Length: 297
Image (cartoon, rainbow, N blue to C red; front, side, top):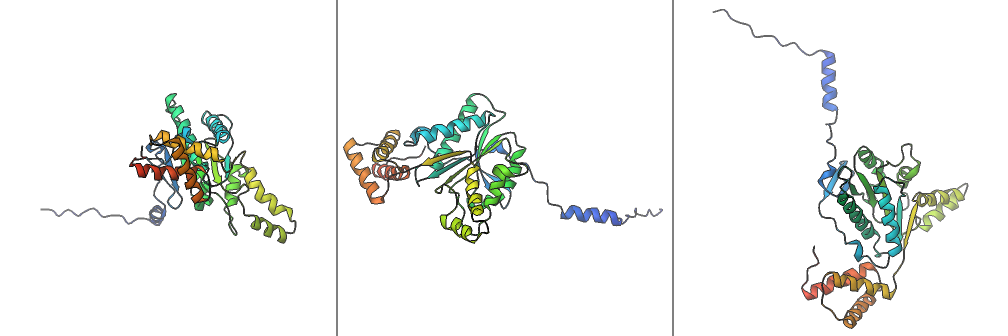
């Protein structure tokens, strides 16, 4: 029987070896984000990934009291954006615990629900949270969102900048001044306890050491100016605080007498040294616990 020689394998050429080496070095193709997976996502800067949030921590818009004007303005701005009309980036600044981040989440829920009821299933309104420490990755985040078919509210909570922090420049460029600018399908909302996002001593130090003292101040202030909508939140009155408590108590069907509820709520606020929506909610959680009532769902 004649012996059949196996076919010889041709060694790869230098060009083929270079191509193979480049293919091994190239990063794997990343899958496009699946924004149909949830209503909200958290941007993971290190992995360039949008983590779905299947249960958003928010309260109904009707439960937010003492901030009627701010609610009306942010709701109208968001509706315009969702309908493809001009709208402004928004900075919600002011007193702690007065519902700044709660308002953003509640407004998103309201407008997203309105869009769904209208049957606009091709374009949904999504909420993207970017953590304060990842703000320098905001341009990368927006690049991922630019080609998506949905509309996005990108928000960061408790935004401020301290000494030696230059990430504000990335935010400044994205909001208005960058070569690409903000994508048409994205709006940026931020909350902060500071109106101008910078500590006073940081601005004063830069002013005293500058050749032209007014320039550092103007640069810092101009960051806030890039938010077209400024919404101020201030400490609530006693009557507003008690109204917040009453609305929460009614919504969750807690048992109470008006006199007893007011007395306990005021004692709670005095122990905390503050009156705010957050203090009212914490009192309601304590009262619900005493009565064995769950506040879930």
